[in-house]
Length: 434
Image (tube, rainbow, N blue to C red; front, side):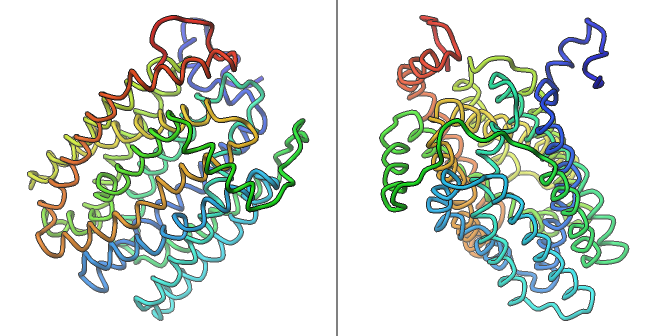
C-alpha cells in the first residue's frame, strides 16, 4: 500500500496530484530521475558560472549553450525515427551512461585544474549529441510507463514537477558548493547522481508492444514522420509556437550569470537564488498541472502563459533589485512550465502511437534544438547592446507570440476536438476543448 492509498477522502485532490505514481514503472522512473536531476542542475549552474569566471564573456555563455543544444536541432528528427523503431528504454539507459561519462570527464578536468574553454565547448558538444538521442526517447517513453492512459497528463506534469523541484534545490546547493569548494565538486556529484537513474531504468519492465516496431526504410519513416507532423494543423502550430519561444524567449536563462553579476552586482549565490526562485515558480505550475484531470483548457493555458512569460521577461529588463527580480523569476518560472507542460501534454495526446517518437523529436528540436540558436543570438546581442535591452526585445516578441496563438486558438480547437473524441479521451462535447 502506497502513501496515496491511505490519504483521507478530504485529501482527494492531493491523491490526484500523484495518481500516475500508482504505476510501478513510472514510480521507479520518477524516483531515479528525482535524484539525477538535482545533480544535473548543479552541473548546469557550475558550468555557466565556470565559463563566465574564466572568460567574463556573455558571448561565450551563448556559445556554450549553442554547442550543447545544436546537435538536437540537427539530429533529433533522425533519432526520433530510431525512437519509433527500437526500444525507447534501452536508448535512454545508454544515454544516461554516456551522460555520466561526460560529467566525470568534466569533473576530472576541473578538479585537476586542467580545464580550458575549448574543453568546455567540446564536452558541451558531446552532451548535445547524447541529448539528441535521449530527448525523443525520454519524451515518448512516459506513456509506456503508466498503466492508465488517462494518467498521461498527470505523468507529464509530475515530470515537470520533479524537473523543477530539482531546479529549486540543485542551483541553491550549487551556489553554496561553488563558493565553498569550487565548480569541480558539482560536476563530480552529478556523475554520482546518474547511478540512481541508471539503476531505476534497469528495474523497469515494459510489456512488449502490441503494435510492431517500425521496420520499413529509414528514409521513408523519416519522411512519413515529417509529413505527419507538419501536415497536422494543431501539431504544426504548437511546434511553431515552441520554436519561436525557444528562439527569443527562453534564451534569457543563458544570460543569468551575467545578469546576476552585471545587473544585480551579485555572485554565484545570487545566481543560485535566481534559479531557485524560477524553480519554485515552475514547481508550483507543475503541481497545478498535475491536479488537472482533463485536457480541457490546455489551449487557453498556452496562450495566457505565453503572454505572461513575455511580460515577466520585459519586467526583468527593467529590474536592478534582487528582491524584485526574485518575484519576477518566480512568475516567469510559473508561466514557463505551465506553457511547456500544456504543449507537451497536447502533443502527446493527439499524436498517433506509432508516430509519437517522431512527433516528440520535433518537439525536442523546437525546444532544445532552436534554443542554441537563440542562445547564440542572445549572447551576441547582449555583448553589443547590453543585457537589459536583449531581455526587453526577447520579452516583447514572446508576448506577441502569445497574442498570435490566442488569435488562432479557435481554429486549433476545430482540429483537436475530433481527435480527442476519436481517441475516446473526451465524449462528443460540442463546446470548447482547448
